[in-house]
Image (cartoon, each protein chain N blue to C red):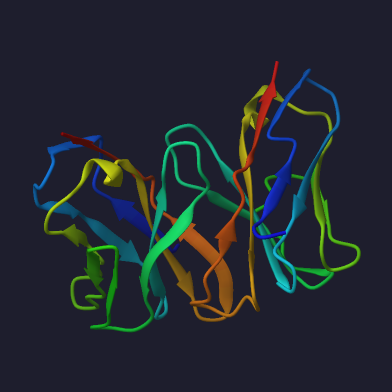
Length: 112
Length: 115
């Protein structure tokens, strides 16, 4: 079945470090791909998305590129801040199937 | 309201009891979803409504779980004969039209604890 596999956490970095959180997927069709973020005490929020191969989603300094050849959608940020501390979820949805399939989440902690 | 509202935020119930969890989606959103998130896991799909009808209920784990959306707005997730394994955070989301790739907006969830 369709699935998403994320880099296991927790991940701890120092402020201004470079961030990569790996995400790979398995899907029978051509999914849309998403990164959702859950800040402490808040609900899940869409961070960025890409709907077709080679698209790059970006928001708040985060980027992810839809790589069909490697079935990946890795999240990157060049210089993280303490305020980026949160749990990050990679997800997919298939055309015609409106539900989201989530990875297990990666907890990120940024130390000052 | 401005966002998706879920009530209650916390619910503790005894094993075997019946519970109802409420979701009030963003006004005008025709698509509504329920997910369940166990500790340390990502959300798992339960059911999707388009308007008043359940378009996909393939994620409901068994017949103790049921959800309704009678007027195409507020939805209620109903769990009968609760079990300890039902303990989780139940998330509701809504989106404008439910098409693939459309952003889903999530509520803060209801934490259900079955003791």
